[in-house]
Picture 1 (spheres, helix red, strand yellow):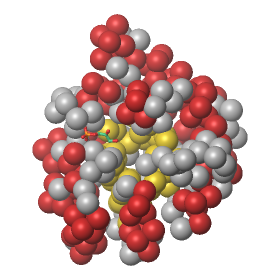
Picture 2: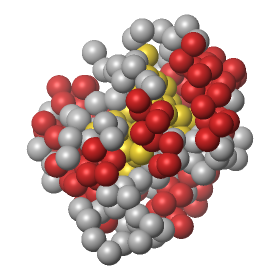
Picture 3: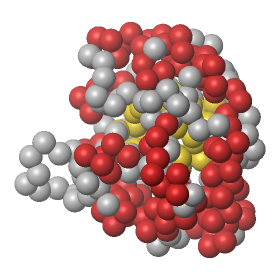
Amino acid sequence: MRKQIAAGNWKMNLTFEEGKSLLAALKSANRPSDVKTILGVPGPYLKTFQDSCDDDSLCVAAQNIHHELKGAYTGETSVSMVKSIGVRYVIIGHSERREYQKESNALLKTKVDIALEHDLSPIFCCGESLEIRKSGSQNAFVSNQLKESLFHLSAEDLSKLVIAYEPIWAIGTGETASPGQAQEMHHALRSFIGETYGQEVADGISILYGGSVKPANAKEIFSQADVDGGLVGGASLKAEDFKQIIHSF
Ligand code: 13P
């Protein structure tokens, strides 16, 4: 059975104290044992927060890593730094990094590789712009993002990934893909993976939906057959909202 995952992406939000309070609220909450909660917290908080999580049902993810192992890259964080503090997940390919840092499918491929080489599981983000959605070519566009960054992997390595479909037009806009739109894309991506890797591999990969997930819509979105959870931005910053989302499976 696929893992059900409620992932938060705090992005560049919350002070250390605010983050600690949010984490404490989530830790003390009664969370369903079959839902894994992963928090994409700011880099400076990773070690403290990872150390205080049980790691099994609740753990943290880095929001990014550099594609080189080490060297003269001021301000960057390497995969071995993240690995050396016990973190096991990293968000790769978020649309904000694709846009602001101009991260291409080819560059993301190198990040996925270096993460897997160091035993970190990528939460690989993909998703189309509004323009592409309006043109009707979203399935081809998102499939190509997977193909160019992931399809060189062995089936064993691909199975270590979590995929997050995040339509750019639904991120931080309050506009959500309808449950039907999410299901359609998730199903298309799973079929696309199945064509190359076989249905068994495709059926084992958790595909999360991201884009204005909130308590009011999480249940319906997560109930779709190919939606295995969410990658949540804004609503993951509020303990009550995120707790409700964790209980929406
Ligand atoms: P919002 O939930 O704020 O729309 O953000 C989604 C996102 O980008 C998660 O990575």
